[in-house]
Length: 116
Image 1: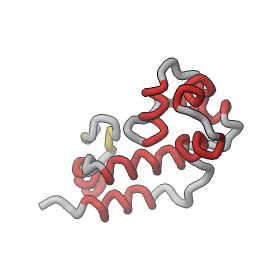
Image 2: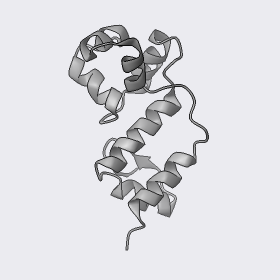
Image 3: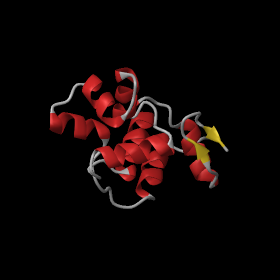
C-alpha cells in the first residue's frame, strides 16, 4: 500500500526548510504582467511556457531558472519555484510516484514522476 500522497508530499516539501522569495506566478501578479510580458522578461519565447513554469505545471531547467532569478532581481527563488511545483503535483494528483519514492528514500525525477 502506498503512503498517503498528501502527507508524503507535505513531508517532501517541508524537508527543504522555510520558503524564501516568491514564485513566478506571484511575481507576475505583483507586477501586473501578462504571461506574454512575463515570457519576454525571463527570456522565454512562448507565453505558454512561462505560464507552465509560473503555475508549477512544469519546471525550468537550471540555466533558465538562474536567468529567471537574475531577471527578477532575486525576487523569485529556487525554493519558491520548487514549492509551487510540489503544490501543482499534489493538486493534480501527480504526486503518487513522489510519495512512494520519498517513503523509500529514493531520488525523484519530478518532471517525469519516477525514481531516478
